[in-house]
Image 1 (cartoon, rainbow, N blue to C red):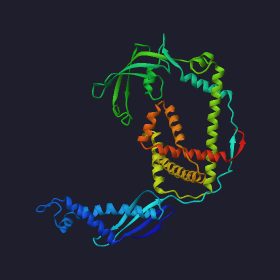
Image 2 (image 1 turned 30 degrees about the vertical axis):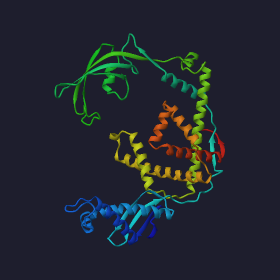
Image 3 (image 1 turned 90 degrees about the horizontal axis):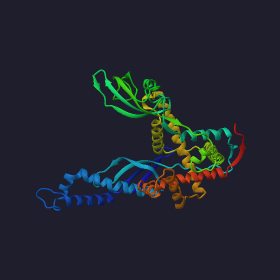
Image 4 (image 1 turned 135 degrees about the horizontal axis):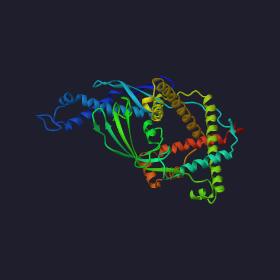
Length: 424
């Protein structure tokens, strides 16, 4: 077998392979024999039909089987012999086959880029001084207070903004004179997602009170069921519940179930805020370190991987934005940001992977198991269910790789020269 490897660009390669006629003939005859043993041809018993008839009738299928059998096997063997590790599936082209002659083809593929690491230890980064103010602690207490609020029946008054209200809504399509199904639902009065006229009509209504109003919906309304319709509504309030906030004191701390006093709760909040800021500070330092390493390198990332990462990033970006409000220029900007982010992510991934190899960093089975326990705890799921899910979906190695990248980032921060700076 003859081969020739060409470098088309930084990561892109092309290999041209010629499989000798004798090897092709041997495989061709074996496949013809297989077809002959199975073929049902009038006038001949299975396996007894002349070879020329078999080839004449099934030549296209025989050729396809020959290519499917020989090409992947020969290509894989040759790539291993050349110590080439393709990124993604090679694309075969220019395939030529005539019976009795050598079989030739080309295959294009991408490989992982080769590069030398610059100095990655003792990189100077600045760390902000970490502190927590009373204002931040009080803000966290207020957030806890609102999250633990109770809703109790409102007495002797109508609906206020922020009340939870059970309503009954009857609609009549005025254009076709047809009643819509009656809706009974729970809603938050004054919420911006509600129709503005509904919020306005609701305020001040008492349980049992009824009000009517009409909405002429735009034909481009996001709810296609009512788009372009003119509907008269009959609104009835069934019940009202108001938000009841606890006072921030020792009793409030005890109600949360973990603390004996407000002082103890504040101390816990302070520790959590410090931990969160330390984590954020570490992330900022890691970002600076990676940026400084990247600036010393010029890595051509495989286009196949860039495209995969880009599509995943773009999908996430688009899922966080209403599609109907997305302008063409906004979409183009998102695409540009996604492409840049994809290249940077893969660039960092390659750098971290190479550092991990050089420093012999590894992730043990015990560390993977501990991470699975953390995932189970965070999602309030049984550990066995999480483990089964990761094993079934083949995500255990992906988790191990992610942990290795995190460990490598920690290694870089630990070996950096950290200078303290004052927070603005």
